[in-house]
Image 1 (tube, rainbow, N blue to C red):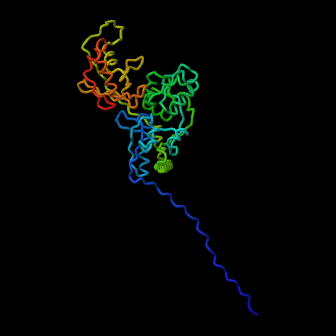
Image 2: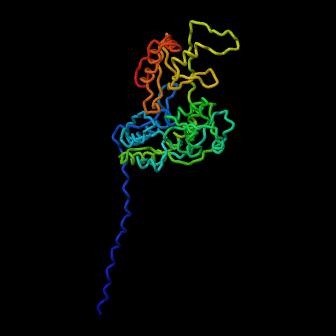
Image 3: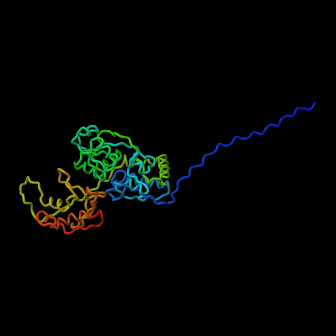
Length: 380
């Protein structure tokens, strides 16, 4: 009989290999310059170091770290807070740092990166404050006033908490904190990370009352549709994973202590003598006239003291060796109520006007002031 044929054993087909997803391309900006908007008035994010005169802060270190990942060159551009979202939307810079809070309303105007930090708002008060102990006592003490920066989420929070009539809005948080220390306002509502920065730059003068009472996210701001959003998100992911963001947080928000700069005294000589010989009289006629007529507004007295502090001036003046030439840098972003800038031209006009007028007390300005010279928009 014919044997039954044995069917051939089929050759096993190896399983198809699991496809390996392609490695995502690392963004490379090819050395491109990226302009980064900062305010230089919001420590510890960005500010001028009094000891060195250099612009420093978390924003600067983070910008350089991001560009190291992306192969780009950071170019920092000092920008006023007011109008920063409109400027971003118009492409006046590539990205805004400056500790900006994400909100749905802002997201309608600009695009945001992924969040890089979570924070909360707090009540910042003077170190010797005893009545304001937290947000609730601030609300309850209806005679207390609140300082904020114009156009911020903190301004909106303050108005919601205490009403618009108790809120004083300033062009920068730096100005709001100066007003707080001078006693012009009783508290400042501010992000906790920024509060820590101002406490560090003003040791022993400020404290936080209570706990933070919100939870919000900080993110970078871009022109809608910017080709930098995804690369920046990639860089943030890398810097989170390798611990760089943690290191920068520790450096600027925990360990940062500013250098204490000794300011030289300003010595003013007069050729006359005081007219009141009463030893109990503390009124110094000549010093008062010099500062209130010649430098009034640029410098001012801290209420209740004989200590001077910059007011319209951004810092103490540079005084020539012979003591006859004082150079003032003005605070950026200041405006009159009608929107006209408070700049060096306005200061010169004001001084020149007083010189032109006749009679007491205008002769005092003429006696001490030879000429007001505009160096640039913010220098006189």
